Image 1 (cartoon, helix red, strand yellow):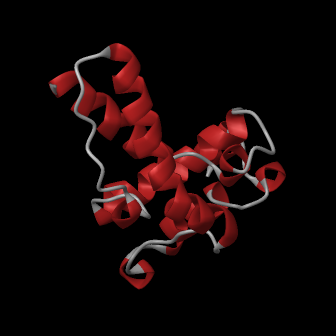
Image 2: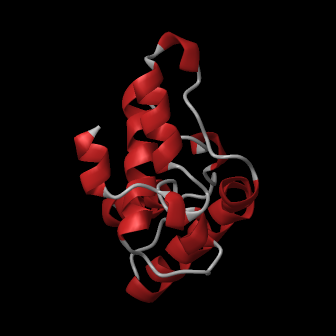
Length: 130
């Protein structure tokens, strides 16, 4: 029981950090998608929650059989994607809840990490130099 709950919650939470190009099926994970995840992580560090957390599914996986467990986890994951993926892919990139309370440098860091076009996201080296 605890394994199925843990796996379900892990998949739901991981999806909150996945870049739009991955969620839409345009690209495979790469360094640019890691930069997106860094931007989401920065928001979570400041706001205590990642963006779109309120769109997680209410389905809880409870199963002791491995095949059923996997099915339940996938169903839960796809329920999440119905709302959150549309927001992640189609709406403007997320920002801090109260951007004016934080430095322009932090806001710029998040904005650059969360560029919708992965080709314009900075590299980790560029972010480190800032």
